[in-house]
Structure formats: structure tokens, C-alpha cells
Image (cartoon, rainbow, N blue to C red; front, side, top):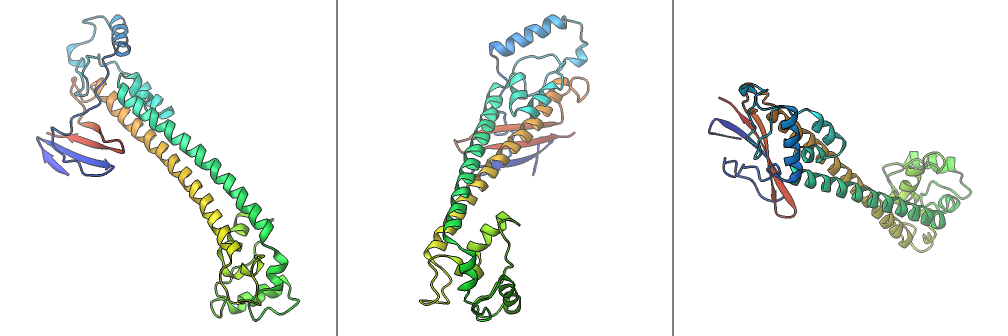
Length: 292
């Protein structure tokens, strides 16, 4: 935070590098468009509000403006930004901002659907793999814990696990959860915990009864990790959409406030938001609060 020219500036940097908070570099690089779209809106407003009908004290313009817009702006753009990030800015003539935020929304949802669908497909694949290569009866019959005797039942294995938990060659006892009880934990447990290793088809107690890994188990865990990574990526894209929407709502509210001259007597709002791109991979945002 720095104080300069009677202002306080806070900066949030997205990407690499920092942004020196000086008045020259805090300039807004996304000025409102002077396109035919914005011009037509101005012409329409001039017909609705004849010249001289609005007192001079209420016809001030925001520092954000490059085009003169009467201070009759409604708060509808905030609702538009709530529905679609960037839509509010676009309707107010800030075409570069609006298009950038709408593009971010498209990228976010496209990334979400692609990664989410990939994650579900990969989940189906590893579940089918486990159903083929992990067997409940083999897990009990070949269980390496010394307290599991031949002919043991699930209850015997559970009792052995509770008694030997945290000690011996097979620590980390985890209670068995069937697929019908909790599908997610069933597929997680059989690959994650050594307690279930004897259920894999390539686990041979005669060769190495204390082996804590098999080729099938290794492959299965890699398949689960790939699915989880895809689903995590989908969640990250969803957060990108949330961030773009929150930014658009806040920015549009400030722009509307500035246009309406809510600071009193046509004065500019004491709060303003500055933004500029920084290469192709990031951007910078500054929130400026003015005070006397």
C-alpha cells in the first residue's frame, strides 16, 4: 500500500512480476469503446433526455469515460455481469473488457466440461480394471497378516486388523467397505492401502509374502491418479469462472457508480478499479481509493 497524490492504491497481481503502484502505470488500458454501438446508445439517450433537462450539477462524467455519457446509467449492467461475466461491461461500451471476460468464461466452462468428462471416463476405466484384477475371496484367503488363519472370514480379518493396527509387517488397518456400501471408498481403499494388497491377482504370497506392491496395483493407482487429476483440473476451471464473474460484478458496479455521479454533485467516485494485460498469461488489477 502506498499513499500518493492523496490516494491509496492496492494492487493484486495475476501472473509473473509486480506492478509498481504509481499514478502513471495505474492508467486504465481498457477505455470505453467509441464504436457505432456506443455512439448509437449515446444518440438514443440524447433523444430521451433533451439538452438542458438535467441540471449541470448532475451531468458529471467518470474518469473512466472517453465518451460523454449522461449520468442516467441504471444498475442493469450489474445484473448482466452476474449472468454472464463481461456482459455488463459490453453493454456500457467497454468492449475490450467485456470480450476478455466473456472469453475467460468460455474457456472456463469448456475446460470444465472437457476435464470433467475425461475424469469420469477414466474413473469408469479404473473401476473396470479393479473389478477384473482384484478379488475379495483372494484377499481373505491370501492375507499376509499372521493373525489371519486359513479358512478365515471377513470378521476374522477385521478382528485381526483391529488387534494388529499400527504394528507388525502390515500396519495401517482400514476397515473393509463394500462396493454397495460406499463405492468411492471401496475403489480407493483396495488400491491405496497395503491391507488389501493380497486381493490383487498378481500378488503371490509364496514368492514374497511381505511385498507391498504389485504391477497390477501400481497400474491401478496410476489410473486413479489420472482420473483424480482430470477432475481436479475441472474444479480449477470452475473456480476460474467464479473469479471472472466476481471480478466482472465488482468492476461493473464501480463503473455504474462512477457514471451516475454517486459521489455527489457529479463528482467521481472515490473508488475505482484499474486493469491492464501483462503478456499472454496474466494481467494486473489495482483498486484505488481516493481521499481528501
